[in-house]
Length: 434
Image 1 (cartoon, rainbow, N blue to C red):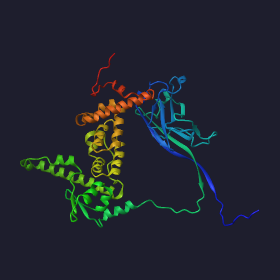
Image 2 (image 1 turned 30 degrees about the horizontal axis):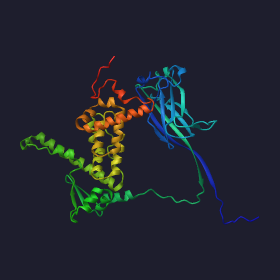
Image 3 (image 1 turned 120 degrees about the horizontal axis):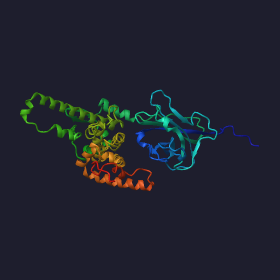
Image 4 (image 1 turned 90 degrees about the horizontal axis):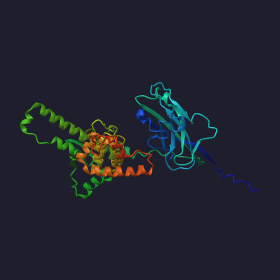
């Protein structure tokens, strides 16, 4: 028998089984209107991703079980993507909206499961409760407030991995190249170009700008810019504002005190707006991040004006103008979160104007799926008057949604059927035929 070599260390491995957890909050607004849709018919949340799989929450206002005669509401979590024998833990929480914290919770996480995690065999498999809550009790409880229900869902997908032994490890810190380049912008060291925006000057570096933007690369190196040309006047970040401010005003009107004040305020707003836009753009070019004061919240109360006035939208225009594709996508992502019935038309127009293709596709899909409501909004009136070509694209998207609806066997409500609720194709109320 040979002696083991003492210089060879034994190898080890370890199998680790754990859950990858994720949560989704589902708000059901208009509960009373959802009642009566029929036993076995559900309202679905948006799909959300946990553990590499898509999931969705299904709420049945009239219950899932015909034998219960709509006495209960049903709630289920469904596997919405392709998968085989997906093992997972689930938690469903009906939120107590009184503030007392008495939520109704069904959870796998806080107890030992005799049979182990639940296994979903294929796409469409579900876990949940046919008798989640008695409907009569629900409608008089603190779970229902202002005709609204809130359901929180947590999914824990079971994953296993085998790790080999690692006797030594060296931690590598996150990249700090953005911070280093940001210091160049902050202290102006080695700057060789100056941007003049309404008299405010910003120092920068041609090489950094050229590396990040094809527009500046062409300007500094392809267009034969003179070496001693160090100051560039920026006047095109806000073309719409310039058109408004520089309207010819008769000299005698300027003698009126209030008019002079209005003009001064206008120039001040223009100055601040231009400086903020350029400052935010330079911050991105040097640091690859957005400034903390970027206004990401758009308002739907005045869709055409308010959306176009946000710094996010101005950055989107600058990103398109100067070829900053990543910045444009970041702006698209933020604007996408603010899409609503009232704002979708104006955001769609902005996306089309600034070549924001992904944002445009999302807007078209949302508008098609909520056609009747969108057509009654003020923003749609603006769209009809100013962007007729987008109407044709919207109709094509509507046709595509109709095909999807038919292929799903009527699972989703027809977008054209929405118009039968009281609107013609021009958004006017119409009388239903009997």
